[in-house]
Image (cartoon, rainbow, N blue to C red; front, side, top):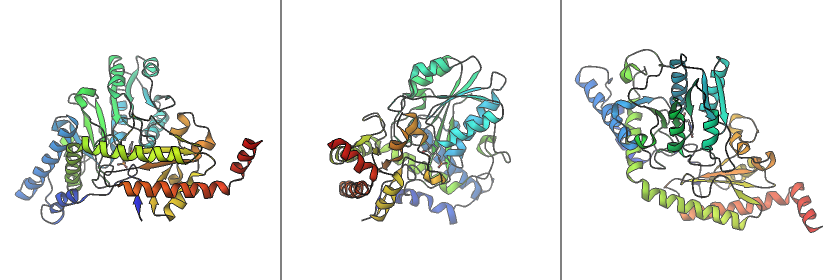
Length: 392
Ligand SMILES: *Cc1c(COP(=O)(O)O)cnc(C)c1O
């Protein structure tokens, strides 16, 4: 059996999305900026996709800008706002649990003379409103807090945090790459100024993203060249992928309540079985206020990498709590931020589901996990010592 449970890393392009994209390679291939009929046809598709994205998050189409990926949206929002508002101040607030697209951008801004406050989170990964309140200063220009965490799935109280930031005169950006299509989003209800999205986390292709910028908010451009995206983001539009993003986001939002209910039931089934059937495990993140598809557990006396390797041999694609993708074995900054000690953070596993996962797959994954954990623990001197201590 081959089971894909790494949907927080990327998702499959689904057939309706691919179908919607298909004409935009060989048939409708004009440049949307061209004035002839080929260009006009392409432009129409661009407008339609922009409307779909806007509708999905409660925005106006003229507030949606297509980008090359979620990472670009994050870079643009932060740097664009930081540069545009330097006259007011050079202080930025974000959190310790952001995606590297935010964290590394902040580190670069620090090198350029900006000051960044990285807010801590509580044991569940929540940003405490009072800690944001305390960090705000007259020279704070932008606050960036993710809508939902990609590792532990925690869904942040964005409306409340946004209000605090804006009452203090700061702009508010949220990285909603994991949240869009997974939880209901209404930019007007949240009152955010900017919101990042990415195609490949919701069954559209890789290499396309979008940034919502509230009408009236001015930020600097990052990519210069032609007049695309109303002169704010240059570069000939990746039309087929943009069409895919529009289609995927519309589908995701239209089916959201049923899908979210089904996926979270599957998630809870897996979490319940893991915690009940594998001793010395704990759930990371909040039991309820988490993304429907996210299960993140720490398994004591286990190394995440060894676990992943064996799961992979059993056909199961998952991910660990360490940043092994980047070649480092450091435990995840998110798990450390919620207070896990190094050795426990190291033995963490993220299973991220989509609507395509079945109960049969979920049970297979847990059965395999049980076997593998038993096997690895039997070989672990640490575990055997621990058992001896327990007996003594
Ligand atoms: C995946 C992800 C990104 C980056 O998006 P890309 O399109 O892969 O560049 C940013 N933030 C979060 C929370 C993510 O999960």
